[in-house]
Length: 190
Image 1 (cartoon, helix red, strand yellow):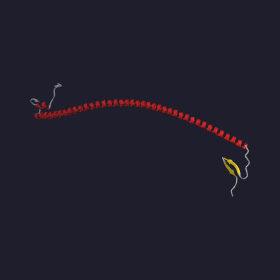
Image 2 (tube, rainbow, N blue to C red):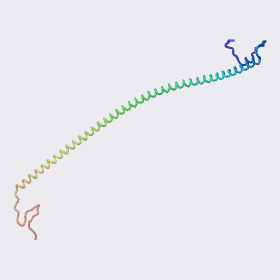
Image 3 (cartoon, rainbow, N blue to C red):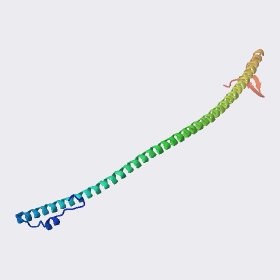
């Protein structure tokens, strides 16, 4: 009986008939052994079934763990891809911001340069206006000085002319001179 499909069950042990023979085995002991063997086979069958159920449970857990492991690996790969995509997007955004900042800086510098040039032109115009005003004031000053000099020279000429003329004698009492049709006397009233 080495057939691998043969299964020996507790029921087989209980039903097996040994037959009878002269001077054979003690029937009660054989029955007792059959009962013990059947009980042990039942116990082993139940234990085997429990182990099979546990193995199926463990296999199911292993399958679930493998499924979780696969899902975790996929999530990890997805997270790494998202991180790489985020880093690449952040890098691109940083480049855009730097480019915009450069353009803005160039615009600000160009505006400042234009404003500076306008201010320089305005100040140059103001300087020209001030120089023109100074030149005008200088001309007015020179004209004033020339007129003052001319007037002073006239007065000096008049002084020189008046020094050259002699004054009439001063009368003693009476009429001194006539100024604008008024006679001036040096008489005193007492």
